[in-house]
Structure formats: structure tokens, C-alpha cells
Amino acid sequence: MLRFSTEDLMEQVDDFTVFVEELKDYSW
Image (cartoon, rainbow, N blue to C red):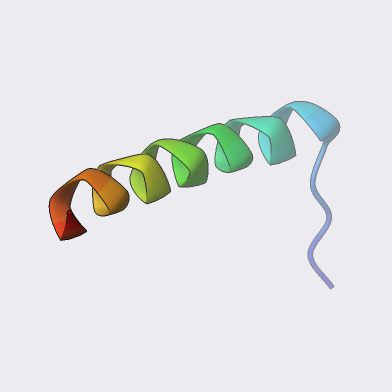
């Protein structure tokens, strides 16, 4: 079972958000 601290989770969310934003820019 994977356990994440809140900080780790927030970092992953930030990375994912950046990735999604770049993907949107790329697709447009």
C-alpha cells in the first residue's frame, strides 16, 4: 500500500498541473 505525505502529494499535483498546461499549449 502506497502512502504519501501531503507535501509529496502536492508536489505531484503541481508537476501534473504543469504537464497538463503544457499539453494544452501543445495541442492548441
